[in-house]
Amino acid sequence: MQAVFIFISITILFALYYLLANAMKSGAEFAKNQFAPPKRINLANFVYVWREGGIGITFRNSMIICGTSVSISIFIALLSGFTFRLLKFRGRNLLSYLILSTMYVSPMALILPLFIQMGKLQLTNTYIGIIIIYVALHLAFSIYLMTTYLKSIPIELVEAAVIDGCGNLGLLFRIFIPLSKAGIIVLGIINFSIMWNDLLFAFIFLQKAERQTIMVAIAKFQGLYGHANMTHVLSALVIAALPVIVIYLVAQRFFREGIMSGSLK
Amino acid sequence: MKRINRNISEGVTAYAFLSPAILILIFIFGYQIVRLFWFSLVHWQGYIYTTQFNNFKYFATIFSRGYVVAPLLRSFLIIAIVIPAVIFLTVFISHHLYRKIVGYRFYRWLFFLTSIIPVVVASIIWTYLLNLFGPVNNLFRALHLDFLVVDWFGNSKSAIFALCWIIVWREIGFSTIIFLAELGNASTSVYEAAFIDGANEFQLMRFITFPYLRRIMKLYTVTMTIFVLNNLFGVVLVSTNGGPGYATTVLEYYIYFLTFRAGKIGLGLSVAVLLFIITMVLVIIYVRSFSRRRGEGVF
Image (cartoon, rainbow over all chains, first blue to last red; front, top):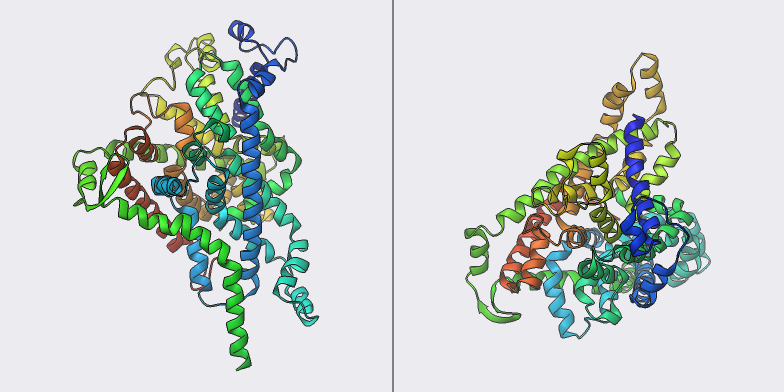
């Protein structure tokens, strides 16, 4: 039994060790021995890819794109979640199915129509274009997660507020948003890491170097120099993985909660 | 009368609140799906579309020349390997984590880490590890298992299996969390009773855990099929670029290849329509078999 667990653990730990150890080696040191730990903690590679390799700029792009998309998707998800939680209206069920079904549309099937559309609106190679796409892609999931979360707010609280003369906007901003902070954090974390990891849309819609996200830059860098410059690629990988891993280490509980409530439909 | 008025105003508020979501979803999904179908029916000249009906020329080409068969089979091969492997491993892992084997907290934490690591990062690390002169092959050489020394991603026979390995490796953490959550509904007293009756760990897994997980396994099979059909672009692009030759050009990657590399827009669009329809059929199966109560919305 333990053998299986130990085997899987070794593949994970070794992959991480290989990544970290070799990211700090010079080319010559790496060529000599891939297995040994680096002789000293050497951050030269990181500095090099950050400045010369242009990873710094792409890191900033990724942060701007993901940060904005996450905030917008949280805001829209709150509005919609509130509506589905509290208001009665015609077409509610049909609409909920339609929204959820967008989660399963194949992204690759839409890529060409979208590409032509964005080209027409001159939104390729811009932050706005990719942000609109990211928000839309993850909106169904966000609304679903937010609605599930808002269900935990007791209806008595809402009734009390309504009796005190609270309108819909008041309910949303005074009752729902303050009480769903945990939900907002979960949604933010999950959306951020999904968007951060995306390659397909960033790869197609951001072809100019100064707008690229970090994943695109690495995929292209690997394609160009892959096996000639492995230590530099590896140190760029460390930088790319860092934000999501830090989030995981800090907010593990939120992560698991979100995945559990989000994926068990 | 007052009540009717209230209902109407509530409806107006509801749609006002939903309008940002509805507008953005119609723009990115609804409208583009219509355009996908329309585009697939007109003549293409390079990257420029005309308004001339193409008599299903492109659809006929991808089927009659058999262009689409190999990518489709590759997608199905990956599905046929990855899904049983993931489900089998996940049942095994989540059973033992649930039974709290030594170090279960650590394993739970570590396994989920693989799902957090970005696709691009995981794929590149594994292409290095499985390189002909990489650590894994060095290990095989040292153990004198020379028949296992393969340039995993560089060999057209093994590349697809190497790809499957990355997918399984990344997926396990995620599926374990879901299966464990489902096992949380199981009652520990059943396990205890069976244990007292002399059942060994394998029997516990086979006769208690397995039935408990049956629902989630079905559900997971469908969602995972949809996922594997539609979300392999990152892995394929970074690790093999669809190669060697076309050995790892799965259906999804084939659309990208036709559209953006080969410049055959018409053909790319017909494959896209095909993928869209296959996915929708799976979604319908999914909704039909798993919607809990009919007539009640999902939210």
